[in-house]
Length: 62
Image (cartoon, rainbow, N blue to C red; front, side):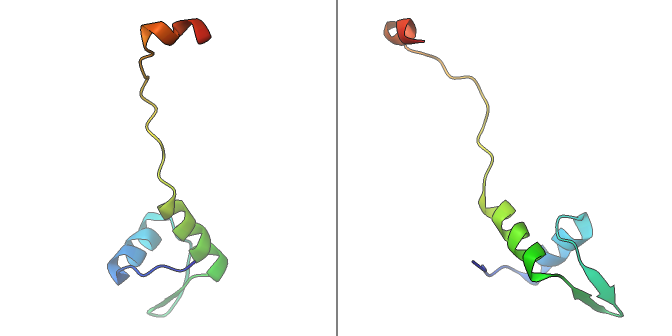
């Protein structure tokens, strides 16, 4: 799946190292497999790992 995003977002990802690329002159080239992997990493949001409280009536099931 390829999604649309601003040019500045792609260049920022390249500059930060999130998206590998090769530069020949002024043009930057990224492999399709690297772009797809970068897009997948943007779509998957890490879940927060904060502890949750268990209702006292359900503690016996832990």
